[in-house]
Image (cartoon, rainbow, N blue to C red; front, side):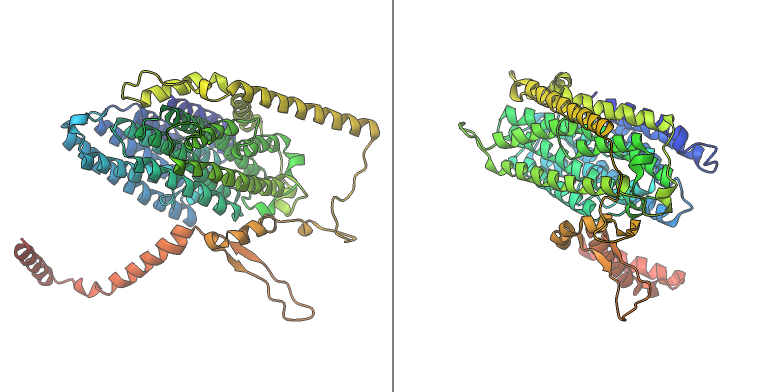
Amino acid sequence: MIFLIPIFLIPALGGIYGTEYWSQQAHPHNGRKLRLFYGLVTAALATVAVSANAILFLVAWEIMALSAFFLVTTEDEDRAVRQAGWLYLITTHISTLCLFALFAVLRVATGSYALGPLPVDLASPGIVTAVFILAVLAFGCKAGLVPFHIWLPSAHAMTPSHVSALMSGVLIKIGIYGLIRITSWLPDPPVWWGGLLLILGAGSGVLGVVMALGQHDLKRLLAYHSIENIGIIVMGVGLALVGRSLNCVEWVVLGLAGALLHVWNHGLFKALLFLSAGAVIHGTHSRDLDHMGGLGRVMPVTALCFAVGAIAICGLPPLNGFVSELLIYIGAFRSLGIGQALSWPAAAFVAPVLALIGALALACFVKAFGAVFLGTARSRHGEHAHEVGRAMTRPMLVLAILCVGIGIAPIVVAPVLDQGILAWILDGTDEVPRVATLVPLGWVSLGSLTLVALLGLFTLAMRKRITQGGSASGITWDCGYAAPSARMQYTASSFAQILGTLFGWIQHPRVRAPRVEAVFPGRTTFKSHVPDILLDVVLKPVFRFGAKLLSSFRFLQAGNIHAYLLYIVLFLMALLLWR
């Protein structure tokens, strides 16, 4: 149920949004294609979530994967879109092959394709470990967990924005669903399972936010933050697995509650951010941060919704992202075992990692919000921007209200989390503490309401001061220039330059700086690009080398049937000798 709610909610809101954003009249060549596969991927996601049989699970999984491929390649006349689609298709089928192996191992162990807990008498250490490793590979690829994330940035950036909202808010969460579901069936997990997930989650969280800092493309920036938040969720699952290994129910409750609630929260605020980005793109016809600016005045509803999503994704009160991260924080601190007999201090590193991720996310979204909505228009794209219609703003407002609602009243969702935790703990534990007994959710609500009230009073006071005392308009910052222009504003790159330099060893930025070679130099340009470190710096060079190496064996393809028969005979002889 916890996963089915976003599976139906976010596509429903996206469907309403798409009636204006991607109408059939404006897109006669691919509008029907998009709507067909948008509905089909939603149905497949729901079928995966309720499957009780491995065959049905795989069929629904493949329908989901292929439907998402056709959504990614909606604008397949664009070469970059086709490349993103093929990269997604390759990665998702690596995931599918791992699922084939996973269910084959389960079939050998249980003698059935029924999905359910693995009996203790059939669960040898080798079988259980193989299932866990295959689950991490299969579902890690779908979730975009580092180092299996290579498809995610380009796929999310190239799709229509309400499809990006579906993929980031729902589709990648099906990888989390599979990981949680499989680990609930495996008895007696060793502690290194949880440790592995903690490391993968921490790496995904830090790498995702660091790579987001260097992006100029608004949607690509948001895509890397999906990798970051998947890392946060996986850290929660890892903490729960460690607690299960050490028989510490409190760690299980806090870790899994934080992970499950963050599944909801990330679905809400990331869908909100992608829909807001789509409104910006719809109004400016550009995704480049350095072509925007000053949109807060002409797109106030979109600016408000983007601000709500940005505050939520940074884990700041009084919004929902703060609550789910707080649960994981408390679980990490409890792993120190202060005043208790049980302790596993290694899990406590989650707390400083979360703090680092939150600080970097805050810097990134200050950059993004400032470059898009503040200042003045940097190009004609920003000058001709306009607010979008109600079909696009209303779904955004619904998501914003839900983000605020969970942040202010987390006690409302606590019983749902309790039921999800009980469904995951299958060992017959009699006493499982409730989330509300481990976390002071009442005080969280009180603090959030107080913060909202103070913010409202401050806003009213400022409005009163402006209306009564009058206001003068002038240039915000001119640095001594008599006639400053829009080009003299901070760009997204300049704002993030210090952090970019600090993490340059991760980002590997590619910079083309201007060369001034005369007293009166001609027109020049500055360009910077942050590639995906794994895909562009590691995998592509390796595959280019492999292609070059294998091309040297093309002489074997002589087009002569006699030569091919000889190859077969030689290969058979080699097999017989080896046997």
